[in-house]
Length: 566
Image (cartoon, rainbow, N blue to C red; front, top):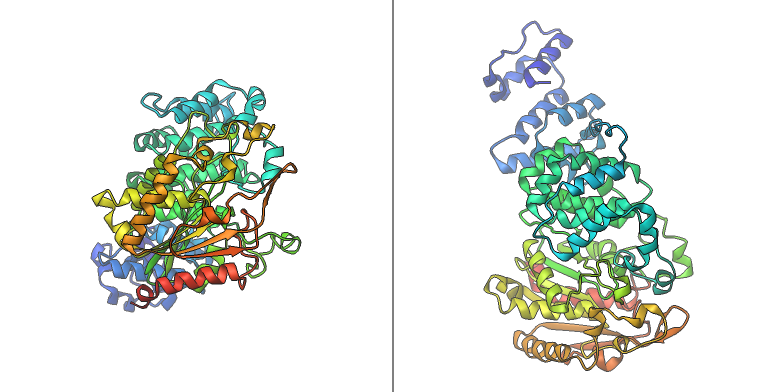
């Protein structure tokens, strides 16, 4: 409904004899509203819509904020905004924490499936329509697998294709079971890789991919893994600004708004990433696949003064690595929405509240203990390769534009060291070095780990992956990395805090291993604090007032004290 048409209705409803003029100039003169006998909040809807389309950015932001804070409107007034607002306003409302869900229209009806077709077959057709040349080996691998195999034959191969990237721990359960694989999952794995290529995103959109992915998302409401991969694809497509209007028109915004309000950290963070990539009004950074903002996930008036980055380790994950330590009591409380009892991600639940002026980012990348379990058998990425890949993604997210503290667990600490050394050699990355204030290492094997040397007659360690081999104590690359970084860190005067486990880690029922001994966790500078936990729990505080968290919080506050005061 146009603005003028709505005023005609208002005039008739209120008994006003004179309808509004048809000229567009009517809406440029706010004082004209005084001639119409309607309630103030009726005018407010249209005034805010007009203000939201102002040439003044500050006025637009204020209009969105006022809309989001409104609580007294009727249903039809929210629907008027939903139907009449532009893309910029809609995304702003979606990224406003207190926005009413009535601002967002339900997705339009999905097109019917082709006769004698299925979602699985249409996924295959979408995948087959994408360019198949000049692809890296992993995209070729997943594409070929999804196009050539049936669900039944995949079941026989699934053991060699699964990874622990999203689940992390515990090791024992992961080793003993292999989740079921489906053609849809392999199609989605391939589409995730394809969606990292801008021209392929255009093809996905042109061939009805947004609607097909939405159908699959709705069909698999009980399968978070499927939904997360769909969100990864959508987040990658949102990196391309020319696709924003199509994404909005296809009805994804209302789905994203529900997801970002979820109490499940992974669901909310995937939606937050996509919405941030869609929001070009207040976000200049771009969040590529695997880079997740834990705080702030909505628009905020709180000035962000520094970044804290969380980098997980071998077989870890962006969220579960940083959960609260499990015990019998809080295992029963995980379903609770009260994060004071148990949190699935303490940087988001605790650190964000204690230090609201921080942007908190967690990074996800694929690792595996063994080539048996590699997600892509063709993918053998060294620490050097991964560090350059992550460095590029983090710079795109604006890391380096403000003071930075790095927080790392296990192999993640080696990646941090390699990233900083690589950044020091590249002029375009100099801001990352200049703004790095400090580093926290949780049981990082600076001098190698026994894990690389351990071998037992079980398949998971018969063929250790490239990542594990690089952790060997006699690895020349590891020694060079340690020597170079130690000299570099001393020269830059980085603040360093290290924790190390004192208890062995149980891997299954057969293996008991002290993964990172005290001498290996000693970087050579900064404090080194032994903690009576195993390798898996060294980065998982038992509770908010536990020493592990409080010492971490103190380091962050002390190191960033001057930056947070400004």
